[in-house]
Amino acid sequence: MSLTFSDLMGSICSGDSNNNGLAWSVDIPDNWMQGRTTYGGLSAALCLQTALLDNPDLPPIRSAQINFIGPAGGKVQMQSKILRQGKSVCYIEVLMFGEKGLATHAVFCFGSARQSKLNDAYTSKPDVPDHHYLPEFFPPGTAPSFTRNFETKLAIGDPPISASTKNEFYLWCRHSDKTANSMTALLGIADMPPPAVLP
Image 1 (cartoon, one colour):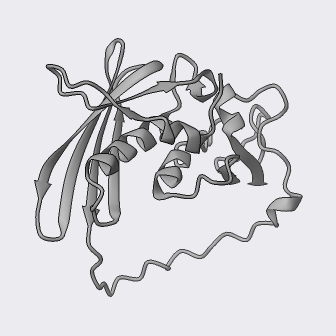
Image 2 (cartoon, one colour):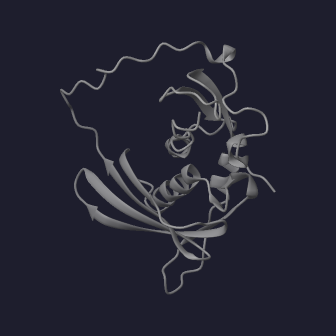
């Protein structure tokens, strides 16, 4: 069985309360596994979605801290807790549990917009070719199964396992699921780029 990102987010269901206070559950299909655990970006996205399901009136997300504690696959359960809520900022903790215990620990900060004089455009955008002309990043047959949920192309640098001496590359990447365009989907793609040592 395989599910798109949007279908998977839509399949989260409320679970029965128990001694652990677990409130939400979802079944992770094989196409989202990274080895013996769930792809990290999906774990982060599920935690964020849990926070949003429990607290639908939050201001925009401002930061996310994600810790991958242990492996999780199959059925996972999530619970959220407000750590602190003020007039303009709310901190929420989300725990994800797999069959072997705690798998992911996330802390999100949601905050109202504030005026700032900081220059957030001081880094120039890299000059990369149009994505229509870029080669696929993963050579055929080498990519982990979860990467099929994304369109990933090499913009600058070298492909994986190429004995490259370059220490950086640029990727063009998006969900294969064209309806995955929420903030949760953006977090879900954040862990997609592999480390620069892969080439």
